[in-house]
Length: 140
Ligand code: RTP
Ligand code: MG
Image (cartoon, rainbow, N blue to C red; front, side, top):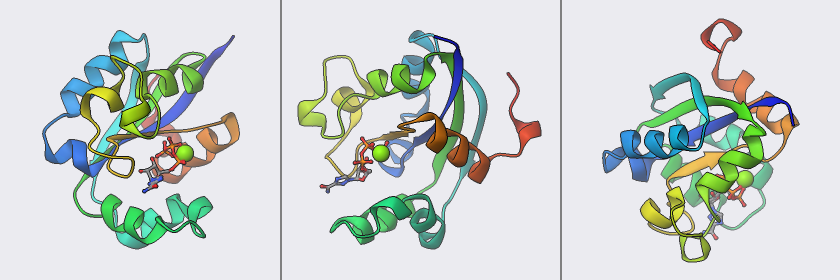
């Protein structure tokens, strides 16, 4: 498997509880390199564009409110098989179902407030990275 890039968000529930460093430690321990990172405060509209794929889901409004409630840290991660590797580190969407040692098992509060986002495919990773970062900000 080639070197890949994926897009990550450390979500409001985690930044609020000062968990950015603890989450980054798990990312780096898994062999993923943080090649871009910035702290931003999304508007509800920006969160809505990012999660547009979920627009018809019952939790969409709540999800957008949550994502705009506090600052987030957006990141680009690079490494071997990075998209799947990061989803392994994240754990299942619902922390009750997440494996031991994963970010969501250790830190997530609920299925909604689940501490991190990670891209699910190469196409979405490329789109998400381009939405948040200019090419010159990616320092691999
Ligand atoms: P993400 O996109 O954030 O990496 O998470 P995921 O792939 O594991 O989960 P996805 O199905 O794409 O859902 C996106 C985010 O929506 C919130 N959610 N809330 N209350 C609920 O039932 C519910 N289901 C999903 C979570 O914040 C989830 O990460
Ligand atoms: Mg998803």
